[in-house]
Image (cartoon, rainbow, N blue to C red):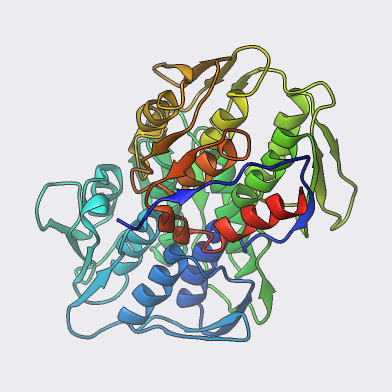
Length: 430
């Protein structure tokens, strides 16, 4: 564990324009699509975090040529369809492990996907069972439904309908969607439970369309992926990461300042780009305009108001929302997110436990959190190997002296320069 990061309190309202990394959700989908296309794709604004690096390395292990230069990544597909058995190290990247497990069934050879101990603990039963139902040989290397796992589709995959739980992780469904065009007759996913994080499935369909896969439909009762051929995206720019944008926006809200996220506006394909609407409900002023204009969050003139909010479609923003709710004048309830217990951490129990160290009055519900006003004080907070928790704790430190975030380097998963960004915001507030 690296030494702790002592957060700096903002002495006055934060006013800034912030450039956030490219979307890792979009980038990882685009990298898989590019690997399946026949030709070279050039992807710009690919983020430099650990998750994306693990994806690029994993594709290279599968024989895909990927080169980085001048802030862009060129990917030459299609993925090789034969060869000796190969091992892919997904490190700590859940998205990478799930996408490459599905992709591995098309590799024409046995592919073993593994990762760090924390990733081995994350459940992946729905994906593994779905791949087996589609004809892949799925062999666990330890516990069933966990990493390491070996997949082999050389006996022949079949398309058609497959039932998958929809309320565990949208990443399982996305992994299947990405390989769907390559299956005989395409793929119809029939969710056996209600879908969660639907905006992420919409992102998947939009990215697939950019690589020539038209006609993907996402509905509550079924997701339909037609058989088709991926085409390379000759020059495609990844938009800024909306989840990352929530932190500088929240910094403006917490300090009564004004923060603009460069290049991210209402035209974004990411569901998390709607977070300013949540801030508006909490009493902030939000300014947006059409086209590519950015969104600006302005802290509420009379402080923050607690709200009752369903974040089922923006579940990665629960830690950000919890950090804001600590400083609201009245209670807040976060609902619809029981499934985030199986993220990098238990994003309900672990988050609440750490915030209580600060004096927070917080209860864990079956599907969310209740947060009430309380007097807060400094404390050392454990990230539980979760970058989202670390970033949210950094926001709390803008208002509460003495907040120390242990293992601060975990933010490298998505935003390696996060702490430098917060320090620049604080410097600008003085």
